[in-house]
Image (cartoon, rainbow over all chains, first blue to last red; front, side, top):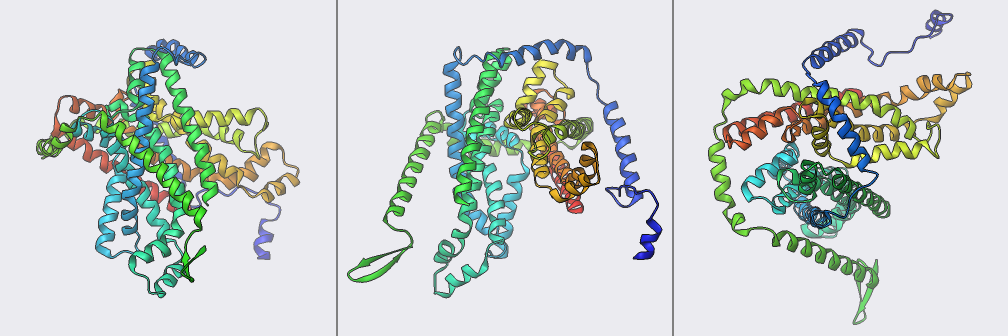
Length: 270
Length: 271
């Protein structure tokens, strides 16, 4: 120790690098430089078009100072209600379906075949992008909020089941065993031994998912799956930037209110 | 926990009467809200289409199989574009997110009264709007193409990265900062030697995590004209070329799985 210290005394100190192996470090640096050159080289940006668009961008920015809630009030109201309804209904259905799947996907309380099936459902639901699912469901079920509702429910299942399963895997086994020792049936074991341990987290996650579902429902309208997105898309297409600004402000406002509420509720249950 | 007496025998109950009533009221309101929501959805749904759905699904499925593998030749370039949108978008977002995060963190912000709320406002407005909406907007402003997608991804990611990063900055160990300050270091030296090394692992983790999300999102940006493989998807959907659609969906799925694998590996190596 002292020899190593002696060798270092008097020499200037250098910050240790983030990646210790110098070969790996240089490979990564050179690799990323080559990639950046190639990537930027393959971009062809029409700067004249961008420059011409800046004026319109400024108009849009200015539109935020005088958003127009009034002239399309009817459409905005219908769209917002549809979005909220889709978010609420899909969260409820999503929770209802994801509790059994979450229980099945927890390795410590489930048998292997059920575990694999449930994990497969979770993996499929998480890998597919909401928009892609919405496109397919719109093609199958036709335009309207039903397709959006099904899309969001499907996405909720993947999200909630995975986190619920992880929560159950982390739970305290002693409590479940104590309930079992009293001679409880398997349903009683679940209700009194396992659920009380995960319910606070489940409530927190559900509220968080409601928040996500509302945000997503604002986009699904672009592909025809109902909600405020359709109104927003139309207002962009008609270059009615003041209406678009009003809709965006409403979305931001609702998301902020939901986030605030979910913070309060999560603080209370946890 | 409560105990009720039934004919002189004590019976264990999980909740007392008030708790039970509150719970029932909550369930009642919840069920009513859900039924109302369902009614709203149901009233605008053409149920004939719903009952017809299995046939339609089978029909589409039949047309989509087998995927048109030869179409792959035309997909390499959009795939490369998609990768570039995700990667460069993440890089751009990080460049902007780092200053915003330092301005938003309670322990590094120059002014908690004025600058911090502005930084938080930037974070919130970037986070609340989905990248597809940003893309929709940017396509209208700067014209269709990869550039609009790149900017959309970058803007959307600023809030996410800045939020996670400023939370990491707020959780640092103050003792190290004090030690560096005690050596007489300037404000910037404290930043470089006291704070940055502590948040660097979090920073690397956040960037890879966001890159993964961005790759998923950039696959669909083309639907609104913002470049990448989504453009091919939109084209194939519009011409009802289902074998091409199924090929593109397979490619997107593979890209998502690969990116998730990469991000899990990198994060595993850092943490």
